[in-house]
Every structure is written in C-alpha cells, then in structure tokens.
Image (cartoon, helix red, strand yellow):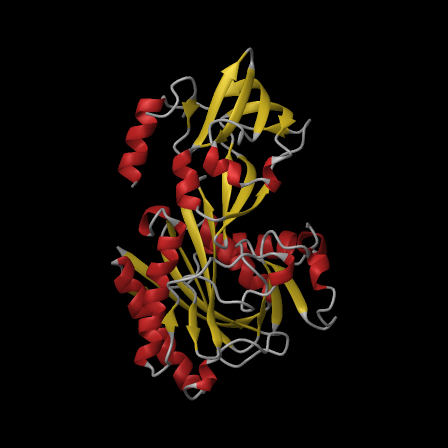
Amino acid sequence: MRPTDRKYLKSHEWCKIENGIATIGISDHAVSHLSDLVFLDLPAKGSSVTAGESFGEIESVKAVSSLYSPVSGEVVDSNTQLPDNLEWLAQEPFGKAWMMKVRVTSQSPDLIDAAAYDAHCKAEG
Amino acid sequence: MRLRVMLDGAADASWNMAVDEALLTAGDRATLRFYGWSPHAVSLGWFQRWTDFADVPADVAVVRRLTGGGAIHHGDEVTFSLTCDAAVLPGDIAASYRLLHDAAVAAMRRLGVPCSRLDAGAHQQARPDQRWCFAVPGRDDVVTARGKLLGSAQRRTRAPRPRILHHGSIVLRRPALTPFTAALADAIDDDPATVERLRAALTTGIADALDLIPAPGTLSPAEHALATHLQATRYRDPAFVRRR
C-alpha cells in the first residue's frame, strides 16, 4: 500500500495537504513506467495552477508526458533541485522528489485514496 | 476497432505538426498518418534548445515537435504518426517502442532491408552533445550495419482523455545535415513504388501489432479546423520554436 496520508489522481500525481498547503509529486508507478528520465519542467514560484490541468512536463525515453495538478491555487514553492537530480524520483517519489507546494483554493473532485489508487495501478498494469 | 489510415502527401513542416497535434487532442480514434516534408525541414524535440541549432542553414525551416527526443533533418523519408487512446499501447513507454519497432522491423525486412532492433545498451537521450536523433543508436532503436534507420518519439497526455502521439521517421536517403544515418536506399530501390510498398507493409504490421483493422480515412472537419488554428497560432510562430 502506498502512503495513506495523501490522495492520488489516476494520472499518477499525489497530493498531501497540510494547513492549506498541498505538496504535490508523482507516484512510484508513474516513475517505473517512465523509466530513464531526462528533462523536467516545473512551474515557477508565484504562478497559478488549476486542478485537472497540466502544471509541468517530464521527458523520458524520447517521450514527453504532461503532469496534472490535483489542486488549484498559487505555487508557493517549487523543487528547483529536482530537475538536476531526477534520480530522486526513483529513490524517494513520495519524499524528497516532491515537485511543488500550492496554497489550495480548490481540489480536484477526481482525487482518490491510496487503496483505490493501488487498485487503479493494478488494473492499469 | 478500426485504425484510420491517412496517406497524406508532402507538406510544410508547420502543417505536419499542426495536424498531428489536432489528431492527438481533437481525435477520439486511432489514426496512422503517413506524410512527407516540402520543403525539407528540421524538427526539434520538445525540450531541446533552439540555440543549440544555430548552425542550421537559414533556408532550412525549423519546427518544434510536441514529442521528445533529438532533432531530425526531415529530407526524403517515410514519416508516420500514430495517434491513439493510451490503452491501445503499453503503459510502459519502452515497451511501447519495442512493440512498434518490432512491427517496423518486420515490415522493412519483408521489403529486403536488413535491419534489427537493438536490445542492449542505454536509451538515447536528447542532450546538447547528442542533439540529433540519429546520431547515436540507443537501446530498442532500429538499426542497420550503417547506423540508425528509424527515429521515434512520443507525447503522452491524460486530459481531456489519455492519448498518445507517436512519431516515426524512416530515412529514405541520407539528409545533408545528418549524413551519419542509415538509409533505405542503402539496401533497396528508393523509388515511389518502394515507398508505397513500405507504407502498406507498415500499415499491416502496426495494425496487427495493435489488434486494429486498417481503413482509409481523412481529417474530420473539426480536426482540420483545429490543425489550421494550431498552424497559424503555434507552429508558424517563431516564438514557439524559440520557447526554449
């Protein structure tokens, strides 16, 4: 079972909300399907993101994949070290490989808990 | 389920990329589209820096692809795009390349091209020191004894629905800016009849690999309208090429 202290999107982003601030990243399942990571683009501090819409992009094996935000709000921090340390995503996808922190104004209605997300990953293969 | 097959002619680079994005975002079915490049052009991978290509002659058009990987000088080649719902291809990206590359290898071998898929080494990366897609073959790439023959790249989206755009470029004759590629012309006649036979063989091979039934088709009015909009607002805009 993946961490139960956060919610997940079926597009494989996770979101942990504490005191109105959401920490957001992507799951181990996403990282294993992406394999060799090459580039990562994250939003700058101070920009806005919208729940369900793309907030960044990641390239691996010549494939660009969009990253989708679980919440709407203002980006209050961005993990600027991560694009130069992409191996963190494989090492600690739920820890130091967080991508951004957002002051939440609303959440995606599509967020699911860890058990439902585990079942989704199992079904997706 | 059907695989719409579009046999397009050679077109401007901005139109080629606009149509592929329209098929990815407005399309709701699987489409295999063949096309060519007139005039010849260079396409940059999504994350590449255009300043790394300052040596491209001014009379060569440069366009940015939605897909990743390294740059390609599109001259005489057999180019195709596959757009489909994500469930049609493996979720594992490397596995999806292997599936499509094996179909392409089988198609080209049927025409007498001695090619194979590399099953060792590292995956190629689009770093500044490896800026051309065809420069150094990597794991799962399709090669001949002369070098890399097929360039591939993808874009994967989840909204509004999970979709994949896969680009494939098979070199017919070596382009001026990338003389290190392999080419079909090394092994077989490079006349129009050969190109048609290869398109047909690729269609059969890819349709079989995806368990789809090929059927000829064209752009829908909505897809055409979106492609026209994307060409004008995105792919013809120099700022879009220079966004990185």
